[in-house]
Length: 219
Image (tube, rainbow, N blue to C red; front, side, top):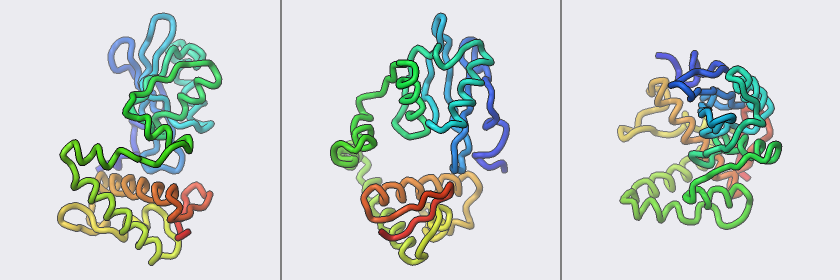
């Protein structure tokens, strides 16, 4: 099985989905997924983007190059429509807005996440309540338990990467070991662990170093 983050789909370029819509894979730094898909929709003389990519130099360069290949530049982007406020979907849109005045459209449901990213307001103040109201209180409990397990794993290991922490945790309803997971599910496990560790860092419970593949330790 080909790993989710490796293969032809991650190669830079502009791939036509249907006439007038192209898929632009943009690189991600230090992430097992390796790329994120941005969609360019021809919009009259310009082009609209669905998501924008991660605001890192290599992603900006690939975005410009890929747009050039379909007859556009970053200055031609008429708007960025953000599906959700993760760094790999949102932050290059902020750069486009600063550089070219490009409007960035984000759904109202992302307001809490954006305020958190900006350092304003409580972190994720409504999200647990939204999960309960949506009929998924078990997800709130799952993530509470995972935060505790992740912090305990870092404390045991002393200093650990995301993958090393993931390897310490039980996975799936059958509590399988990380080494037993297939490539796809091991990738998902690393993503989930990465999100929990980032949350613990934001809460001040853990520290992360500045390396490309960071190690986490108790704060």
